Each structure stands twice: as structure tokens, then as C-alpha cells.
Length: 456
Image (cartoon, rainbow, N blue to C red; front, side):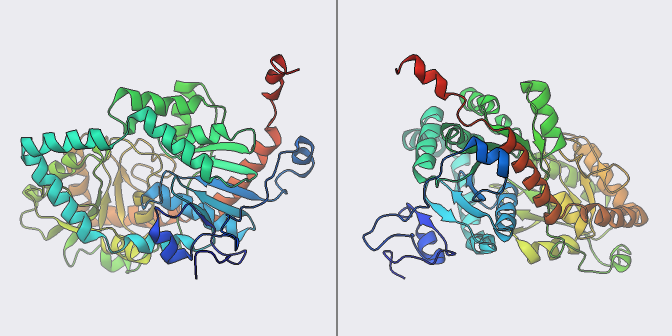
């Protein structure tokens, strides 16, 4: 299809795609009129009376402001919500600094396919990073180049904000999904209901003070706040003094389910597989994971224990036996979880992390941290909960499940029942209830009277 052809109405809307060739290749190109102009949806203005009388039954249109089309757990959650809203009749748009896509149910699978074959590139990139870190001269040169090419925090946020506003499609509701997208949501707040779906306490993601304070500031913007976990909801209330709605993510239990017989699995007839996730962010606490597994291998030298890690590849391979399998998605990820006996997550903090819940759904015994998992993780009921930054206690918990297969089996069985409560139907019902509540309380024109002071 040429880039001047107009796609069918139910096709993918793609705007500003010159920097996103993959969008053109996979989704059919920008939605343009024959004269080359962008075929945007008709602009829409808020009517207070219509909101009160009709509530959510308006055009049922919603935009999600994304920093990028990523493959993290947070991105997967957003794709899941966008899929289900499409299925319920909403017009859904995904807005990034590079493009605008009119979403279709199932489009997430096409985006995920983009990332399935990048393991070699990840390994190569991390090998280069490892080489740079080992050479002070190369590291200094890399930092100098990064400073010249990269933007300062304020400039970066300003650039993202301008691009998101430029690419925004007029919709009833606009959801910011990360701190760098929240300012665009605020800037559009007199043209759309602005919400902020917080998926973590994002200030902690940054090392420099200015970036942290920019992230902190977003929690004070006049946006409707929605938290993905009880822990995050509590932090925002206690630290910022602001209430938020609770919207837990969900998992697809048709995909994430046991793929092996649990009775046979926990006989430990073969190798005992311990699985975990690697992420390059410091908060993922990789060094403690290595230290804990070092203790486990030291005490299980006569046992058949193997450690398998999915996600990324660290720049320096640790001095313990470990196998890296790269990024895994969907059915393959479910089978990966199901093949493992124990999954552990030892981050410094999380906010409703998906891997422990997905592993529970697949019948794997879970060890996790207390921070951000209390929506589903109950110590000694469906998981073992250990403090973060405690590799010794993590190792003890792993050894406990190795030595007590009955306990591991009981936790796995209970975890399956827990995971079945977090369905996409329930999560989408909750999201729609939040949207309706926010729409009924929204005052789109509350700042317009200010201009009467300078305009007569």
C-alpha cells in the first residue's frame, strides 16, 4: 500500500512515521488523504452537560501517551488494556513522540513480534558495554559523546511533550503512562479528560537530582491519578497527599497456565530449575541475585540445580553456572515459567511486577519481595516473601524450597488460584468504572475564567 492511500476506518492510524519505518512496514503506513494531508478524526470539544447526562457513553475514544513502543512489563500491561478497550467498542489511539497509531485488538502481538529476534543484538550491545566499562579511556569517551548527543532533563521532557502534543488525536480521554508523558497530558487538559496511570514510583528510576524532581513534580499535576498497586497508591497518598484510584494489571490465564503436571514436577526427578529475570536497571538488584545463587550452588554441590535467566544479558557474565535465554514472550514465556520449579524476584522495589504473578499462574513456586507485591503475594500462603537487599535470606528461601518439595508444591497450587483472580475482564471492568467516575467529576473549563482578567 502506498503511503498516500487511505486505510480502511478500522485499519491502523499512523502519523509522523518517518522515524518509524517498522510502523510503515508492519502496519500499512500513515492514514492520509489523496492530497497528502493527515486524515485526523474530527476534533471534539467537551460539553459539561453531555458528560453529566451521558457519562462514559460519548464517542468512547481514548488516547494513551507512550514514551515509546517498548517490551517491558509496563508496556505489555498498556497493550493489554488497549486491546480490551478496542474489543469493547472504544476508539483507542497510541501516541508516542514518533507516531500516532489507531489501535486494533491484537495489535500488541505484532509489536511483540518486533522484539522476538533481538537477542543477538542485545548480547552484542552488552558485550560492547562490558568492553567500554573495562577501559577508563573508552568509558570517558562514551560519556562525553552521550552528553553531547543526549538532551538535558528539561530539554528532553520539553521535546517529548511537544512531540506528544503534535501527534495527539482529539479524544474524550487521554492517559499519560510515564512521568515524561505527564506534562503533555496536563497541556491537553482543557481539551480532554487527563489521567495519569502510574505504574511505579518513577522518581526512583533516576540517578540525577533534576530528573528525580521532574518525575516527582508529575504527581502534583492536576491529572486524575490511577495507581497500579496498593503500595504505590499508599506512597502517593502519604508522600504527596493525593488520592488515586487503584487499577491492578492482569494476565491472560489462557496463556499463563501450567503446561506440566505439578505432581510430577515437584518430585524433583530431574534438574531443579531456578528462574529469574535480568534487567539492567540497578533496582533489579542483579548483584544480590548472583550472590544468593553463589550461596545456593555452594550448598547444593551434590544436587542437580540449574539457574536460567530471561530478559536481558548482563555486560559481565557472573562466576556461577547460569544460562541466559533472552527475551521471551507470550506462550513461550508461559512454557518457560512452567518448566521452572522456583522463580525469584529480588528487586529493591516493584509496583505490581508481572513475573511473580505469571509464574504463579504457570504452577511455579515463587519467592518475591514485600515492596509492591502485596496485591497478590502472601508469605507462606502462595509464595515466600523475603526482604530486598538480603541475598542471604533469598538463598535460604531458595534452599528451603529445594529441600521441601511439598512446600514448593503447596505454594505453586495456591499461586494458581491467586493468579486466576487477575483476569483482563475484571481489570477492564475496573478501568471503565474509573473512567466513568473521572468523567463525572471532570471540570474541563475551570481555568477559563482567569482569562477574563486580561480579556474584556
